[in-house]
Image 1 (cartoon, rainbow, N blue to C red):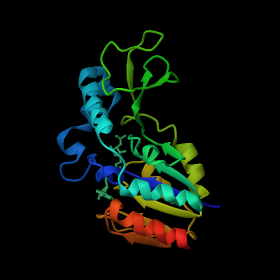
Image 2: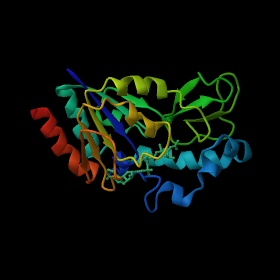
Image 3: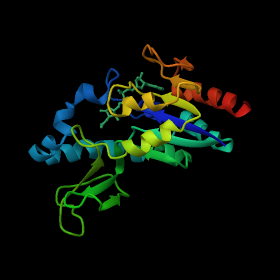
Image 4: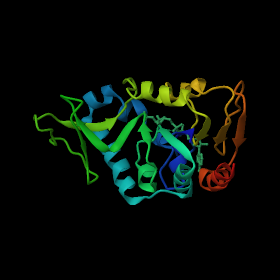
Length: 228
Ligand code: OAD
């Protein structure tokens, strides 16, 4: 089976009703990320940080995968599919994709502030001040905040470097190190970039740009790849 690696960003989940970050009315239009998504914010106002992620988590319990997520699952009939996502939602998993690596953490998971290896999955949306791990320390969102290390970047580079086909879906490709992953993809392999506002890509060979929403473009692209 050929290895097909798919890099996804917030645009992948936009049609499920999850806001992106940098589009008009995106999350970073209404919140300063320094105030809700950084270690400094957590020190200064943990309640505000918890509330920001509680609202995101609450919404996640209310939405579901879209036609784009579902299309990607079908690729597993023919390919060894690896999804590397910047998204913190679980919509790829709920659609049925088997192999998903989360670069920026997971919204439904929380972890101990004392021992980062103590990770728990929430079955409800609200994390409060006073919710603690077994050792008595406050729990925090299992999210990579600005200024924190992206621990999963090593495994992501490994998988991307072995890709025989690559897809990039719904990301503005501005946040590093995730945006740098494309540089590890082999020159000679076919690449597809699906984003209605796909930026002008220079210097990447064998790239087909599809300026369309994921939910519309992916069912068609997946059909094409399954026929090849
Ligand atoms: P952005 O909000 O920066 O970019 C979203 C991209 O999705 C844009 O290029 C849109 O054109 C595209 N888009 C919108 N609707 C779409 C649709 N229906 N189908 C396909 N594409 C669509 O989001 P990311 O690139 O994912 O990190 O942002 C990267 C990181 O920045 C996030 O993981 C987050 C944020 O700060 C952290 O919070 C650590």
